Image (tube, rainbow, N blue to C red; front, side, top):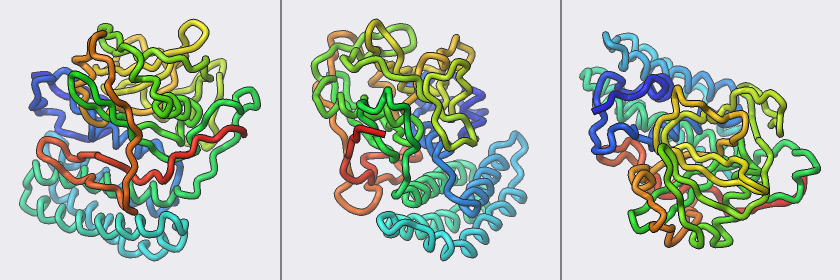
Length: 350
């Protein structure tokens, strides 16, 4: 069994010393990693949320050290609980009306999760502390999404104004194949034009008409979309960069297993699904735009061959004002079936 990669330990603060309990051990576990990467790449949502997230991640760091510091972990947890209690009303005050019910629910769920976490820390129960900590990070992500419901996308160059755009938000796409299902979460904050082109192709039924091609570490999804710009949001910046001469590192990492990216090919381009860790590889961040991650079914992606064309591709929406059944599941801290994204609107223009 292969141990988790260093970048996974850094991003997720997950059990770096333990093997991965799956027959696809070398692929790592995509679901929680993808959520953490995407959550950390969200636009700023205020100092209270930032401080709350910092304390939660400090707890995770303490319990994943070789010599676990349970006492310090509990101290950081108590600080997180104090921040949550003191800032709850202030957070709701600045929450957009559309996201208010979700923010209330996320705050309530986070409060419960932190209480459960405290018990796990007191008992020094690592499996429970690990999974509950990941649930806390998921609650934090849903809270931040609620705060961003009135997000205004930055302008893009006029040359790209005719291309579809996902104006903020996340969107979840489920692919049904001969080998099983897999789900992709695409990011409308950090790759709005690329995500828009991908979702427009899903809506048009394009991916049910093509055959995937597997190479060593990836699956190619051919597409008829035109050549898209390289989209990059550098860490700590609000503005997106388009076709920069010297691309900086994007907030969406190109390395995790499950990365979905778009790259040029001929007169247009292709979407790439990487099912292995790209750490240390000849990364193509100077040419490829990362637009999201596989959050479920990465083993299905790894099995796809040319004969296994997708039978169905659909964009999932939640029917109610919540994040569906995104609850802990055996073997996976987060099982995502749908997300509150609202009606999908792909817009054109600035």
